[in-house]
Image (cartoon, rainbow, N blue to C red; front, side, top):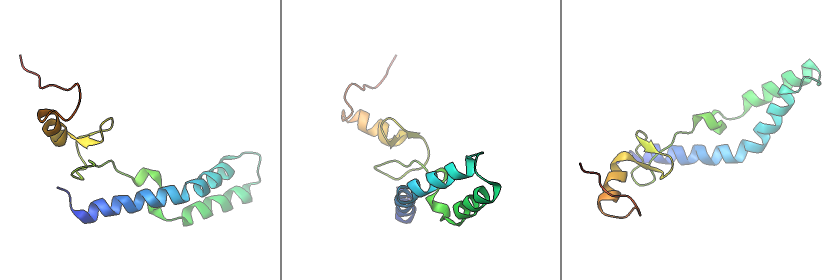
Length: 101
């Protein structure tokens, strides 16, 4: 089980990303527009830099929904490999059976 503080920090980041997504996209659009004057584009870059760091989507990290584990994460099921194996063994994932040969 991951530390509760790490899981909470990740949730806080997700909220910040959602909160600033529109503003960040608008500023990026202005900064990338070649038709606008250089000063306006530069001001947009400065405003973008003043946004909170944790509002950037690249700072998000996928974590297991059940344990909070950050490694060996299956995106499709949103769980770690350990929980995937445990849930599959208990028959809680439909269509998944333990392999043997």
